[in-house]
Amino acid sequence: MTEQAAAPLADEPAEVTIASSERVFTGRIWDVRREAFDYGGETLVREFVDHTGAVAILALDDEERVQLVKQYRHPVRMREWEIPAGLLDVAGEDPLAAAKRELAEEVDLAASTWQVLADYATTPGGSDETIRIYLARGLSPLPAFAREGEEADMERRSVALDDCVDAVLARRVHNPSLCLGVLAAHAARSRGWDGLAPGDAPWPGRTERGRG
Image (cartoon, rainbow, N blue to C red):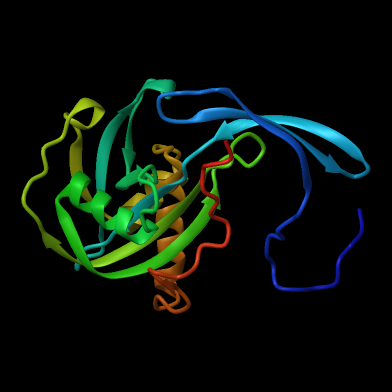
């Protein structure tokens, strides 16, 4: 390991030669892929969740309350508090358009102002899933959306941003988009919301499914 000269902190894209890539499991929502690739003078093999990617929305009203939903998540057997979110599973759909759709479908709201709050990879050692968290403000109500499945009994709550931060630091909530989103919003607010990218900013880390 070598110490690098001081530079802006940023992840670095890496180009590797893919020797083989195959889908070894096809699921209802996402798949598992096995790839062999050349790295460091040898061929390595890794299996990972081949994910569509997703968007999440930290919707903040005029009283600086975050719009939350409580939804059942079967893998962890919990009804988690979350911010509105959804998969990028519509071919060719723009991520910002998907975020606007999810905000309407999950909390019956539209927003007049959209900015990028954070981009993150959920589990880079085992999944190619990336999520973009948007900050949505200038909220207005929409007609109620008909929900089904795990969303049919969702509970909705508006919670002050500072109270959300307290819940994260006290480890009472665990959803990663909620935790990262409220901490990023808290930090951005302390800077007067300066430096946030517009909602339609490029998403360099975004990869789309379709490798066969």
